[in-house]
Length: 92
Image 1 (cartoon, rainbow, N blue to C red):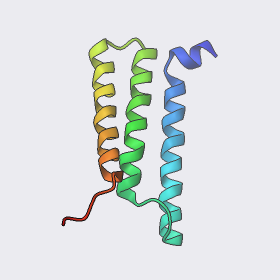
Image 2: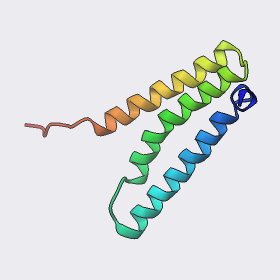
Image 3: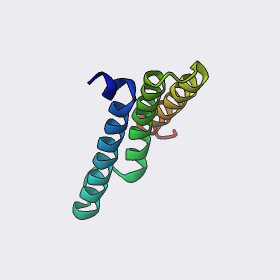
Image 4: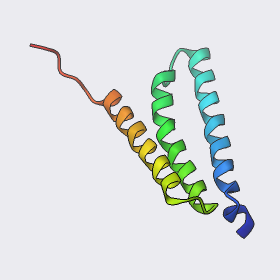
C-alpha cells in the first residue's frame, strides 16, 4: 500500500475514476437530455483534476513550482466554475 501512494498511483486511479464519471454523465445527458451540460461539467471537474495532479506531484517528489502550477490552475478552474454558476441580475 505504501508503494501505491508513494508512486502516485492513487492519483492516477482517482483521475481514471473522474474520467469515467465525466463520460457517464455526458452519456446520461445525451440519452436523456437532462443532467449537467458539457461546459459546466468540464469546469467542475477541471478544478478537481488539477488538485489531484498537485497531490500526485507532491507524492512523487516533484519540485514546489510544479505543485504550485497545479494549485494555481485549480484555483483558476474553480473561479471559472463559480463565475459560471453565479446568478446574474437582469439589467434594469
